[in-house]
Image (cartoon, rainbow, N blue to C red; front, side, top):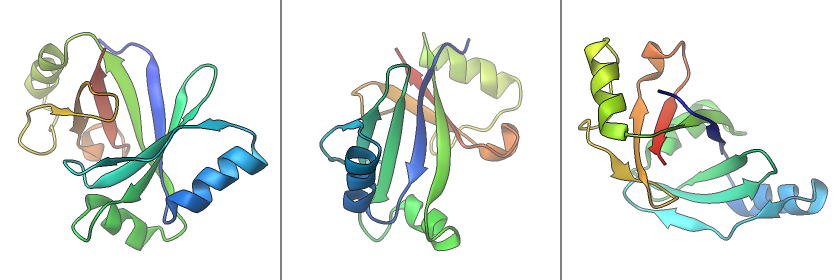
Length: 134
């Protein structure tokens, strides 16, 4: 079911500062900021040869990321994203095995313009897990 690792997401309190660190200090290519109101975040992607790093900043006061940053004010790893061929089939298989899908259980369009959903971290050994249909 799981294919390749699509990205590792890091929550950051200041997207502009984090982007500057990756560009200037680490010499990486970084995308332009992209607001995702449906997810309550603004994202940029650090493009690496074998995967991406997604930097997330809260978008608006009701962002679910704000609670994460309240507990981790300097930021930190937020989630892992894996690719799947068929997100509905993956969801159905996971739910049948007892996994909890966050939200209403229906995929939303993510930063890459593809359907995504998130699995409860309690069901994946403490790691928030995103699935993205490729």
